[in-house]
Image (cartoon, rainbow, N blue to C red):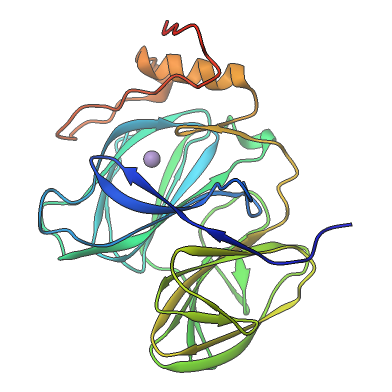
Length: 300
Ligand code: MN
């Protein structure tokens, strides 16, 4: 028996890279995952002209895909496979860490005044989490107009459109955008759990107002959702089949056991080859912090 009540989860403020404040919606104490989505940061809107903008030095990932969705401004991605890609609104950067990769993210020299967007992680299922690393840039993903909403199918399938973004478990990622008052009934897959996070404006979901700073989680068993706005608004909707595997997340690693996390932490700090090397970033690589359950202070 599942608890069918929606959950309203406050995001928490956190710092990304060299001092950029972000709002973290996932993971949270109340909810670790939504389908395979295991991480959701809302960054900005912030002034990217003062200071150096976004700067996250080279750091590794394992066991996940990073999914970057800017809605204003640009981010320059560099990774250990040699990819160097500026991402702009409307495009998706998808990095599949698999057995190991590293990357840096920064505001490029030439940039728009406002940086605003979201970064999400998707956990890879056990059978695929040791796959070869990969990076894909999708210049555009499909959009559908419905009852005054411009709905972008960022990942998965909805409203007869399918995103080209290569994911490995049944999931969906949508952006719901309005410029004016609008109202619609959005079909959902009832085998999916879902969550909504407003990035701009406000959205009325099943009659309740949702604004930035709160993640609304909806358990499985719903086949539609009433959405309504009174003006410009932008919301992310993510969903997926309940993941069904216990994951262990620490720092930038998605694993299954503490031993794997400790190994990855030590391997990165020791410069092991499989986590790669990022070239061209004007700054230091990040140091992986030892997990809290390592109490002896050992770092080798
Ligand atoms: Mn990263």
